[in-house]
Image (tube, rainbow, N blue to C red):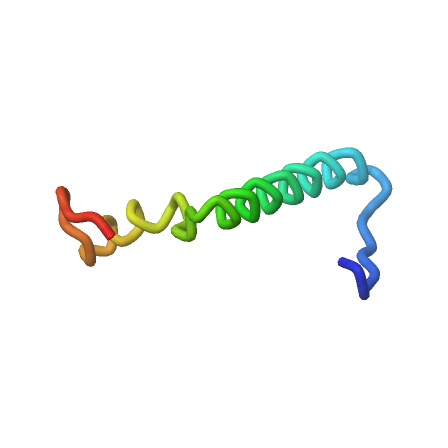
Length: 60
């Protein structure tokens, strides 16, 4: 992150860079969605249903 150091094995650098870029891209997409007014994360309703806290047909 911006204020720390991360040490990874040299053999893992390429794989970690790909994963890190995917994370950055996902966070940028989420920020863009929030700016457009979509404040609910895409996974929320599915997880609430799985936990039995939101019935089929119910919406937030």
